[in-house]
Length: 508
Image (cartoon, rainbow, N blue to C red; front, side, top):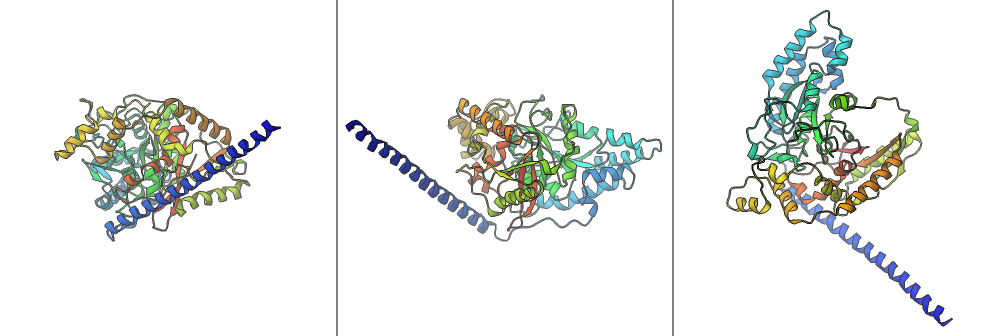
């Protein structure tokens, strides 16, 4: 009896200690969130004061042709309801009209594009031409497009936005760009990126900074920022982007357009960035940015080429879809979602609930580690940032670049320097932990979605002021998560927030 009497208080004490510990952790978490929110508020307020009333936006579209989808334009050109030359010239004139404000197009080929459009029109004069066959073989015939400067296009610049490669030109097309050209599309220019694509803003020492068409004091995102800006400004109907950590979806969200990252192995990565082969097991994929949802299916098919193994246009009974949604990543280091960003997910979930009869709230196990997981998996990509910054003429380091900056000879952007500092000084993520968490999360998601499930996930808040993302780098995990999982995901526009800036959601 004496022994039992002694054990009982000890068990109660341990239970009480556990309760106290959880309570203390809850209080600490609450305090941290409030401090984080206060810092974000002060930063936003300070940037607002700095930019004041400097904001501009692109002029409204006068030519309604610019508002049409890629699918619609291609059909009208094929059926000779409008000439390719008229279409291409209309978009070129729009590019000229807005690019002074945006700095999105960093290399143009307007004369060459018009000449190619005239050749398309001459070909279509042939009365013996099989239009049905043409629709299948060249579904993009005569339609203009852009691609980011980091995607190779024969004879065009490919500096990757880094000074060590300034003036470098490509000798051949990236595989995906080749597929788009073979489908009949006409490239009219290349667009701006961050240095070596490694930041969520499109700014570098060669081309400068790209501005948001809704508000020029706001960033366009990265790394496909120039593409998203010129698509949103109606300078082209679609663009060829790439995405290794949200590089399509971040700018698509912040510029109010659609952006699709296909699933693992669906697009060749040869000629995308500095890659010299396909890399079918990479986190990176090439994908489209466009104004109209109806373009996504056709563009993904073309981008994938022979790698597309299964049909993507199967009929779907909306009432049989299983809808799941998550309200936040759970990462305490990420900035809090705005009301508009959170409400966009809830609004979409309620809409699908009316269609399907249900929408289930879930939390992906491990989503709170999105940034850390992406940081680990980036080390598994076949790339060496320290060598790429020198154009593979050696290796650089954080110390070397800091010394250059102190001597007034800075050669890399702040974003690149911060990546070097992370590479050189911060401890690496635990491999076993990262692989285990990733595997568990992917298994959970695949089991939940099955063959007819959709996940609705926040895209994060609307576009920040230029340079503001330096103060909230961990928020990037909202996009990077889907690269870690290597699953298909699409950024979908959901209107404007209270600041008049685009807001969206991700659907996977």
